[in-house]
Image (cartoon, rainbow, N blue to C red):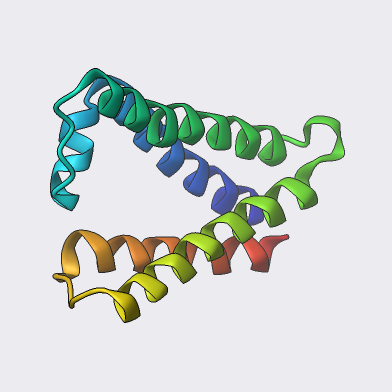
Length: 121
């Protein structure tokens, strides 16, 4: 069960990462972020693309027991997801109300994935 959770969260990050690299404007569109300059596309590719793939690789290594990093890697990614969830709550308190998708949809995904990773750590 624990390995399955780690793999599922890793696949989510991998999919986001690949999508961020090949279609940065499409990935950002639901958030109404304008990605109309090379610098903006680069930033989306870095933060969503490269980082997402790196996290997927880390979770892949954790799932398959590479170098005994499982617990640390899983807790680290769980903490990162919890931080993302917290950021969305702060944004909700500081900014005007937002629609459910994409902000609150991803809040739910990040919160659930964080809790699941903590449980399997």
